[in-house]
Image (cartoon, rainbow, N blue to C red):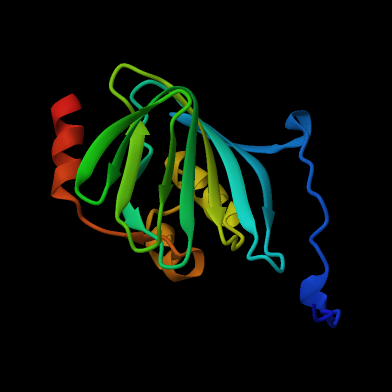
Length: 173
């Protein structure tokens, strides 16, 4: 059997562990949700961004959009989350997991009549906390919604029209 050798490089050095204590985590609140910023890393392995959102009943969540480089992971901790993936709408319940690959239009909101507590993870990471802070300011009326559109390339968040999602929201209003 041949002996394997490897050269050490900066990409071989593992990222340090990241611990965020709940009591020390930054939160961004708006009238319908609270986002708890858990951690982000742009490390050698591609990194991640992770946050937790607690949606009030009737919270609108995110309109239809896609990411060009990130996979978005959803894990429902409690409650129910209505989700659009492509042209299909489904409801995720406590314990359900969903992975949405790049270039796939998706949207989400608290399911009708329900609150939702959801863990989100994006990989690779790319400094999305700044986007979440901006989004929170817009939702509170402290920033212009045009800033969201102007930041689409920076945060890999590209909004699209979804007649299916619009119809679902109108039907539950």
